[in-house]
Length: 489
Image 1 (spheres, rainbow, N blue to C red):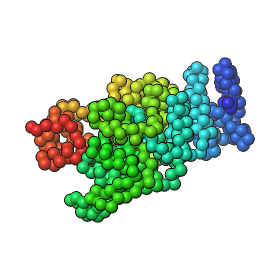
Image 2 (image 1 turned 30 degrees about the vertical axis):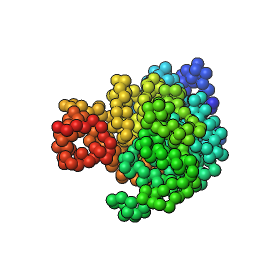
Image 3 (image 1 turned 60 degrees about the vertical axis):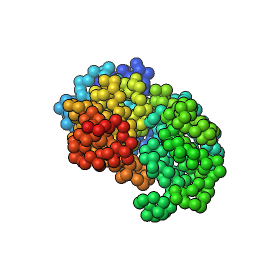
């Protein structure tokens, strides 16, 4: 580990910090002015830089600006007198990790330097990794097993079934399997079978001929044709309607299928990867899933661990999501204090990695300050609730607002949900998704209708009045979106 640099024209401050850090077995190197520190940067770098603001010659702010241009990941702690607090705030906004106001408590100074040191070591571990952001992050033993399995399957075209709780990253694993397979240069097509209405799912999978049904004004290629030569990922396969399971089994068995309304068989050269959060064996026993299809899909099974089984991965995931979220919004990435990280590691987080990512998106938009403390987190987290997962079909997290109930409206930030919606849209667009308006529009309508039904205790017609839409419209939307719990007034 590299030494901690102390830059201050006050010899007594340098001496006190050197001795305090030596007791912590931390190496130091001191400079009486910024000029000498700048010269030293030509041939070596520190792990953490601690600098006074006011010094003869170049100031601490000059040093900060230079360091941030050369070493953006290096934590810089600024020492300032109380009369310089405006300068300290400017330094903080300019990229300083934190500032110490004179006279400072030496124990608190050491604690702050320790935090900066931890941040620096995390930065170093990321920089020493591959230049390309990995598809999946994880150092826990359970995730290493997943990585090994992906490696063993890298040259195979075998069918894979991915299981695990919602939000564990099943699609990321499917994409990694495709990327490291012989089909990597061909399309990867993903379809969430639970998100498509039953009467449209067959056309989505297999396509349709012109005139096959009302509204079919042109021939349309289905996902099997779009994935030709590549990989087709079918998420939430456990929710596939029983009659469509038969058609899927036929494709997997003989490699041929028909478009809806078609009479010409089409050959499918596609690797199928499926995923589910459900217990497929139990669904087979319940008669909801075909046993022969289950055996066709369950050639190789990969189980993804929940976040509760890999809590040690939470710090690196948090850092990655905060950087990713900040980049999409064009702002500086926030950081979490050690206490906040420890608090998150103590939670169950039933939404797993997706819930953690949504939380980091929320923090980027809503949390005050650059360093996030436990008190800055959404209230339901500190109360041990799981409101963030109340509407899992929503990719735009609404967890800054308490769940709606009759007579107790939610209290979201004024524009927070719009910023989060923009963030989700940006994420989907950057991933190359083509149906962003349709997907987000359906989820937006579903959220409105579900919330209105909660307010009206399931009374459909009352909910329509509250939303300002017609009775026939809400009836049609409830059917299209598969919303349960509605009843006639």
